[in-house]
Image (tube, rainbow, N blue to C red; front, top):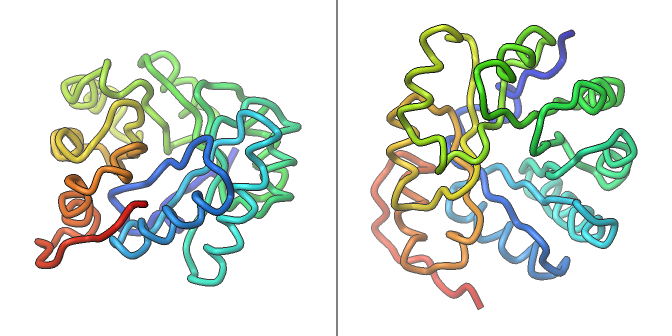
Length: 211
């Protein structure tokens, strides 16, 4: 299978923001903050139908600014359909379900499956899924990524779960292509570091209100 390449979507992005279980207005506000920080990719999980309006609002805001918004916690083909209808540019799952990946492929969007073992990573790679979400990343630790890169050098990992501005650099240094952060975006103390990680440049001005 082909068509699950995230390189055209991610470009040189090193940070992705996850905006989970927030009202549409707050989701858009934080997405705008992420884009202002230089973080170009946003994920909005849709583990419940009630979260779909937030995804739709963020995707619409992203189109206005030429930014990417995807749907997270996509566990079924039905949720893939919901994500596509809401304007998602990609889907993300907590685990590896090839039927979900195939559904995303049918709709012409890439899918990021969750893996936590070399066996799962190999199964995904054999299915043409080169970009993989390693979850929970903080439990796996940076050393896991260095070890797995040996036998599976073609894998491109997005580290998710427990990542913040304080430890994100360790995962990037271990070879992770993208780190995904969640609540860190609502902590003003972490915003300058997130901006540095996203852009690769020191930040000279503070980033403002999160409320």
